[in-house]
Length: 149
Image (cartoon, rainbow, N blue to C red; front, side, top):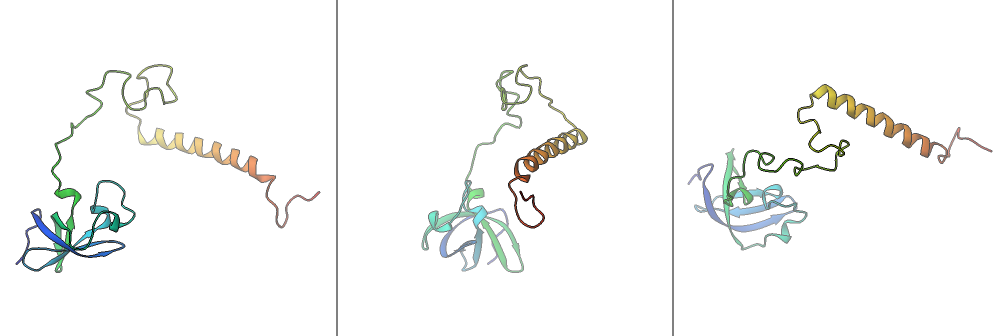
């Protein structure tokens, strides 16, 4: 019996590895829930979230060459989030307000900065950071060819 991609089904955890968990589906087929699909939060160890024998609801996300990819986090129904979280906030209350370089003037940060501007700003700050780092660590380094007094 083939499970349809996109469907939600109940399954039983049959094995746990360091990269995910194997889940037995109705009809006797087995699929893998990758560690990145176990929970919404970061999962360091699958054993912290699942145990062999647990009944779980999974969503079938793909099936290729007899291998079924499953997701626990996509099987959980969540209400839709608004498309733009900035549109509902009063001016000056958005993310980063008071934390940008232009914190003195409310809402004056650039909302549409093109790629070239971002790249040049990144390169400038990177060069400044590297020169500061080299200045601070240059005298501390020893080894061949270093300054000797």
